[in-house]
Image 1 (cartoon, rainbow, N blue to C red):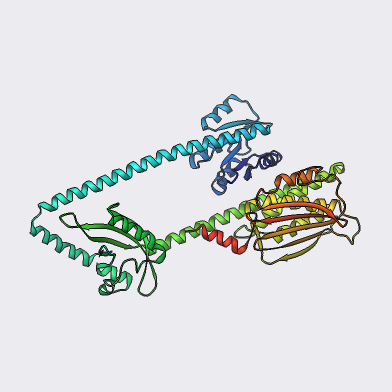
Image 2: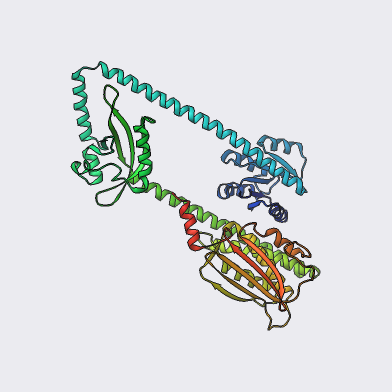
Length: 516
């Protein structure tokens, strides 16, 4: 089961980053971080989080309470307020929005986790209750409609018994005129699903003559992918389980082209109520389908452009944060090593968003991520020395979008450690080897050095702060890390597979299977 994804709305960058780390350590996914009520309105529709942690007091024209109210009007997303204030008027406004809970800063980890789980659970129960009510109303409406149709048919059958032969002849004449002149296709078929008549409009749609169609069943000219549903509905009608049906389907025209239609079919019965055949009205909706496909593509292009812009803005904000940290590092050399590590982590996240903002699909190429992080780490703590890269990939590999930031932080810590503990001998540089194929990849980082005799990464024994972070950020599925020493080298081996990484063909297959 996927971890719940949480959107953080907090205008204090350090508080937001601390909250993100806490959530990720509790195995929640962070859908994104925004700093204003206005921006949260845009991001809820794009990121579709499972829950929102909303700071009550935000800079800008819209505070957290108004932002939550706007979100409730448009989206079904639970909100938990964050506040450091106890102002009665503020709390009264907050209560009117109907949040699921409040958290008072500073946050306690147990209280944070418990509040989130209770909020998600309550929202799920409310959602299930609402869906059950809607489903019941839908079933009642469907049953009412079926009873109405049955009642109308009964009345029609009673009226038909009272009509004279003259009236029957008049109706037959009217039907023939309608059949011949109707702008939509009208066909009849027998129990064997073979056509028994087809009007001129239907013949023009398919490019067949009526005589040619009378030699075929309607399944023969139906697109193979649509035959199963069409056949199932027909059999249900023959068994008396349904009286009529309506579906969108595709015909294969005589010249091989595909024709999208909406088909409405019902049973034909004689005066005694015996089955005579099927009557179907067929409307050509190919133009509507094409217009719908174009509209969906345009909407998808707009969404992609919006996501790229979001990544670009995040990257710019992170770069600004890096600049401020560099200024502090120059002013306070006593904390230089600490700030170098923080800058490196922020740089890693910035690189991810920078790469995502460049492409139309926001896909991350594993080699680009690894190279960018390695070179950046070399600039910060390696004295300008870039690591040696060796790539042995059979196919390009992509990093799943929501795993980009955690993976970048893991790689950053491993490469930083390699630079910090490497030999000062310039002939012994940090070496990074990337190998793999369609099944996954292995990232190996080598640097001269030794490990403590009690060091155990698998049990978490004798790990530093950086490796503690690595252990917390490492994805639960699709990633495995080993760190050991041999032949005078410290060797970190990170094995990656799905769902963290995938080949380009694999990504296409996933997208294809999810489309209709």
